[in-house]
Length: 148
Figure 1 (cartoon, rainbow, N blue to C red):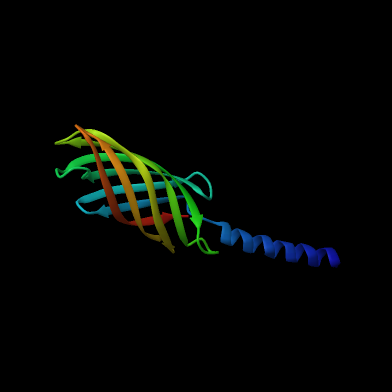
Figure 2: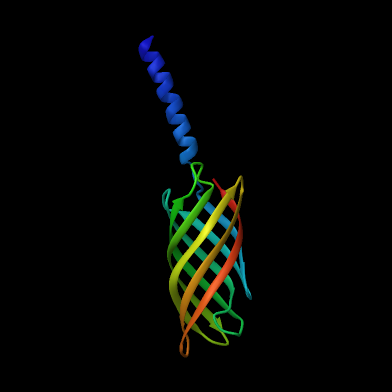
């Protein structure tokens, strides 16, 4: 009887821990900024490490260009249920259009998960190597579908 009680308590503790430890497998949606609109997809490597890819209209210069980007993000959970997360990382962007080049820089942002919806903001201060070295502080908001 004593072993059964211990096993029952242990089972409920494990069940509660797993419900808090669950996180998303992927996010798919859109990222918008000033003169920027991108399709965004993010996949989980584990509970704290993620890869993100973007494709769309990017404006590292005054002209519109089409671009693609890839980034690594490390997430820090800000609450117990992991619905609010801060992330930091590093990313690259390639652009084609009136000017062609690529950009690199750090990335940071906040992610809020509500059921199957992800809302977030980010800042991507990026150095673009076009005809000359240009710095662009790219700010954006995203709305994405959450796949658990």
